[in-house]
Image 1 (spheres, rainbow, N blue to C red):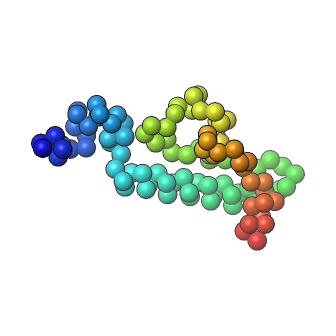
Image 2: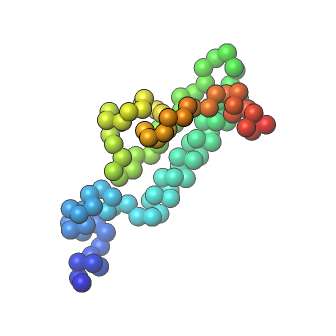
Length: 100
């Protein structure tokens, strides 16, 4: 019963759950908000750049506990897509059409 109520940063929780024990729901929500803002800024910059030039690189998501290290992922560096999804990054024309 006492182990159930140990603090999140206790040695037992870190041993059982690793780095994930240190992340609260608030930390996960904050990381999601940062990722969404970075994606929105990237989309805005991509839509407003010249079509013949290359736009900015897509943002890299905030690393989360349990995520594979960048070298171990199957997607290129800077790619915000999930390794399990196979859809492509939207083009500037698609973004402009979406934001109308």
